[in-house]
Image 1 (cartoon, rainbow, N blue to C red):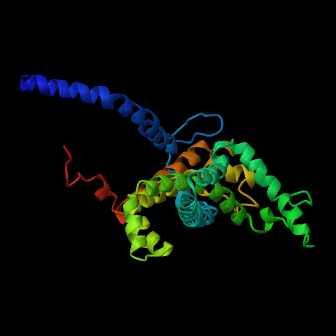
Image 2 (cartoon, one colour):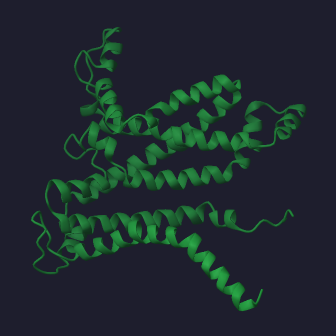
Image 3 (cartoon, rainbow, N blue to C red):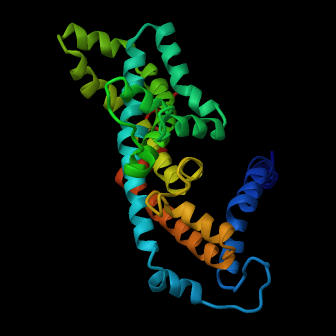
Length: 303
């Protein structure tokens, strides 16, 4: 084939294979950010009317919104708590325990833990609302009532704990599936050799399992950190960001400002802050976990 024809064919192939993905990326990721930037510099409100351009929303973000600092602190606590305790650590623990069981029993327990993710968000939130209901008919109060403990109201006394638990239990299932697949892909002869050398269970996990699933741990940490940063549906359904603003994370704050208060332009400006924060978090974690090494070409080529 002539070199020019080969280059043309290669270009056509790239357009056919990458064109649809590029269009979708532009339509659903790039274009919304551009529109958001444009709205953030207007005075758009509930009536969707734009009468002028202004920078007052950004001035309000950096000095005029007294609630924003506490919201950012709540978001940081929520993301770090849910990510470190449940989405990574507990997900890894579930994967280790279920892969140590016989195949059918392990699959059964994984299916049980995966049920909340398969159920509608409203159903899952209603179940948690029943669990922490402050009445005698709440599941938690029925349990503690057996020991003579008076009814508890976790949504008022420890609302952040309720938020972290409700999001953590459903988030751990994602890590569990990823880690289980990674653990099962480890060559079994490594485990047999370690046991033959007298290694115990903890030593095998530390020196074989964890190093072998390093990239999966990095991916889950980055992915779940970004997901938690922009998620708020379970918080909104269970606590509605309350009491007061005690469980109002940044993403929920943006939603309430824009769609409940009708401050669309200010909500757009706040959401730009979320885009910047997500970009910074992803770049920092990408560098921290050295994810670039994962994308390098293999040093050994198999033909």
